Image 1: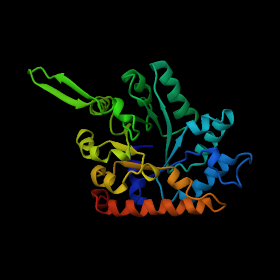
Image 2: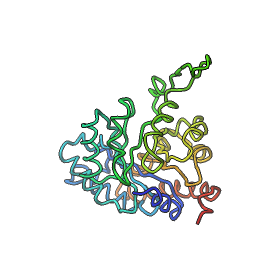
Image 3: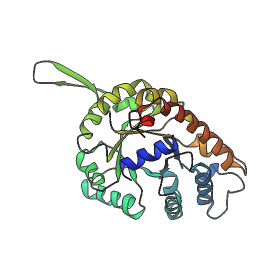
Image 4: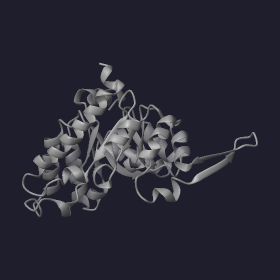
Length: 284
């Protein structure tokens, strides 16, 4: 999906909601458990109930890979069911040496036709480059995550000599954002920034003012949609805020899809209020 198309969908729906299809088979409603094709049936119901409220769906591949070949089939069927108007993300966190990354890119961009895939930056440019070689496809690079372990590496201070006998320090995640943003463009690069890192959003926008941010961590993880929107919206919106469990497992009965819709509508309504105060809603 082209960046302009994504922006247009956000403007039309007045929403930057991404629904995470992290479909844990153990948490399916009781009437679906044990039923053949239960994961796909559940996902289709969630998609039907929320597609007018969101602009994106994110599939965490771990929940499907854990089911073996049947899980992969469920993932392919789910992606095929998502309307073409919605931005699809494979949350796979891949990256390896160049020829291996090329195969990962082929798997998610060609075989399953996702719009984007999450990638890990640790191995450097040659591990990410293959994901940037596709037209209208996106690499979403882990920037500053919401897990406690982010402090182990992402928040480490780097100190360097800038050549003028003055020491310069920055967090590792800042170095990652600055470096990787030069490898692609705002048309094919996004960054993951966890919602629980709200104090860093203003700084992040100084570093990458135009790039889209994929923001997980609202809902069960406690991130504030208001704080995220206040500090990270840009003139094009520039945000995809993901909610997974808070939406898809809002209810555990036969009306689970209706209850999921109620929560998605709450997010969408709040997002609309923030967009109305943002430049994007004044650009036609």
